[in-house]
Image 1 (cartoon, one colour):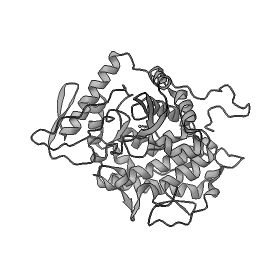
Image 2: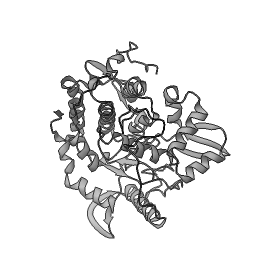
Image 3: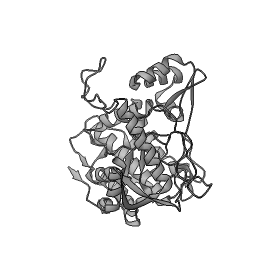
Length: 383
């Protein structure tokens, strides 16, 4: 069993971070300039004889609990455009109608040491592949490794570039972040896109895996407040799928047509060859009553929903005006940007509405045998 050594990620228990977290609680073709020579991705094909080795992600788990904030389940109501910041006509913070969905990362609260620790931890994960034979792990253990490595790398690079409005604006050595091969595993250079498409989408047939990968955008799947591991990967993917499918950024109706996220079109070559029928079947798998009714009453499917703004709390821009944060009606001495305070008030109002509607609990089905599953299938394994 390999345990990743603890790094300065532990400094995420900084009092300021804990204070604001507590108050908030009261997710293809090479790009220009990239080497066109494709690495040997086949080396990462899962073995047919997995071993029982496991990887410990306790450090990343602790980090996620400290820096990721949930905005709660979607109410399927677009958020209105917020008022400009006090004393100025300039609009700071988030204006997206999807801003009250998914999860947010507290990039603006991270100091230089914490940001540097993300790079250290990403290199720790890369080095783990020199000690543990990743391809010989169980399929769930492998899947957890690739999702965590992808998400660590995304958090690292966005933290390095922050403040920035949209993650797609980030370049690594002149190459767009998603295509930049700055990750090295077993001597093979990988981009975040390579991990998704050339490894996971290539060797896992269930489209539910797409919900594990965080893209840093409001319009994408949420970053979970837990690290993935072999035991929880199925549960977290189901949670991510249910959250996304039943949100405005995942599916909505417009003019009698079913609009879905552009991410479904992106993964179509791997999971949805008959796009309209396959996507409808996939959405129905996780749809609640409201989404099921929406699917039933709409016609053609359009992959037209997109929101590329950064999934942080401050909107990717430092605001010059601040406001004291309030917890349980009591103002503290800890000050946050005015636009962030406004977002948190909207979040609290939303949570009160969720409580009023009696939508305070969720039930996740995992580790069960479904009709049609082969007898040899390991219960809870993501195929």
